Length: 329
Image (cartoon, rainbow, N blue to C red; front, side, top):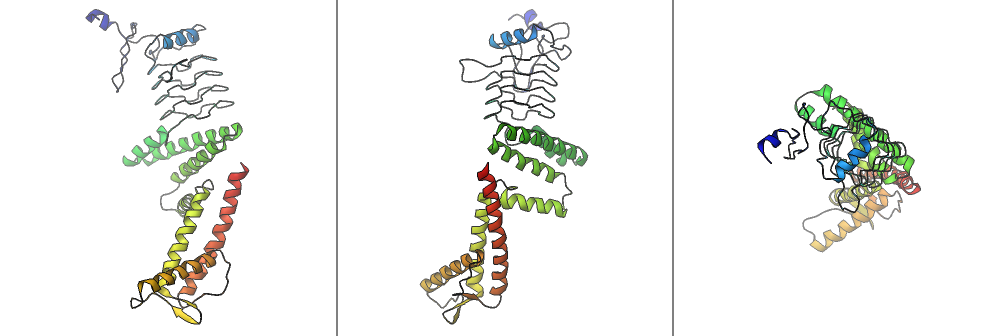
């Protein structure tokens, strides 16, 4: 390419080193990258489809307010979809659009109209989804990543001590997760909606005062059962509590067969192991509130047993509620 021709090229370039070789207008941008041109002409949809299929630079396109209803941006007969990362689809009309397997990483779908669009397998990592309209959108297997771009920006705002900005970004994140959760429930994708409700409530927790009781309780519920979405956490907590109480009984003592037993360094290793196994058995019986009565607590063990029994009855009830909730979905 000659220097003269190079000067005629679109000035688009991103941080990954991608550039556009399209012919630039007086603005220095090609038609598709020019942020001052609204792509709302009747022929723009067909032209964009042809542009993508002919190998044009699709990264970073300026498509805000574009009229692209029914557009087909599926990279047919190819394993990877078209790369529309860093594109601006702000308020774009993507109704009934075919976006299967499309890469929208770091793009913006803010307030975009996605009604009845096919976004199966779409890559939406760090895509701005604030205010997007999801009615009847196909979202099976689409991937928004572990965190939204707003979450990343909120973490940066906290580092910069801009707590007002961080609060606003967490509110945006909560709204996005709420919209996605509601849409997932309408679509019957309950595994996905379960994940979104966890993230929604986590974002709500981050908006609470850092050392408040409400935030502390919210964190406990999250750790304990994943806001009701992870019954396995209840099981893990139960196992850990049983083992901890077993250790406490081992050292504080239990009574059975008319004698009181506790750890004694003068006893053989086998005797201490048998005592610990008895403590595990007693801890399980206490946790499940069976209360056979063959082993009884002594001294401080009584307080431990009372605490374990109370916690156990609550934990079992919670597990039933969480498990039934998951299974009925």
